[in-house]
Length: 381
Ligand code: SF4
Image (tube, rainbow, N blue to C red; front, top):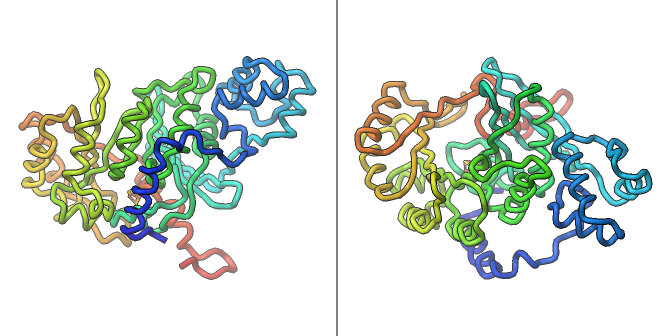
């Protein structure tokens, strides 16, 4: 179920109170080796009387060489490989469905160990790829325009399940190319799964693993203000994107219930306090929905709201589905909106949706599949 806004408030208070201690809170022991940071794996090797460089070797096998079996880790002695297999699992994700778009995008529904599914989208470029990953099964935020929001929150992903999406998608990247960007814009609100998110970023950025630079990892939030402040205080090395999507509280609260708890002013205040690194900008995502958010008056308000922020705006024409209540804007509205921002000195790009022919918008593949009657079974409700 989608969390009522009162519970989101409670979550904010509880987690804020917990902030100083959250890093030290004991975690349930996981058998998924991809749930471990390099330091944690080195600690485990130390308990086995092994030197720290064993952890680096394992990271290379997991993330640079895509090992699918501990037996492949041939620079570790056989008894050590057996020991790893006794203590850990590789946490491989299943491929429930993979759809390929005419534009080369790949959309995955990855199967988790408990049978749940999450989506990732691999978007190709001439020299590199961008991967959009999920952080939760479903989402509690209930955004009105989003298929995932209709699922409600089912559960958080573990760090290994987040990292595992990158591992699996990397297997489909052609020789000589690589995944350069990871964007946390798939199913779920990343900051609502804060601990796992931060750990997954730590693992992804590790030189002995994928080695993503801070500029190539982007976290997109709907606006959980307390967690946004943790993100700043913890100096998490990643880019920040804000899913803004409206210029008045009335419209934003209608589209995004989170706005009823932390409104536009509160969100932008947290953004103004956010430490933006040299040569970086906060990205504000703005979905253009015909007759709802695509008026030129919105463009003018947006310029005023973002005045003084080191930022850019990413305009996203709404990707309408057959049963969505909203419509995509005409191309001329998109162009006029962008032009209005540019004329007023606001950097603005238009993100043309990739993979429209394969249901690439967040939640469409998993939620759409759940709604489709399965042979011999009742339709999911
Ligand atoms: S848009 Fe993002 S935050 Fe909103 S319901 Fe969908 S997944 Fe959750």
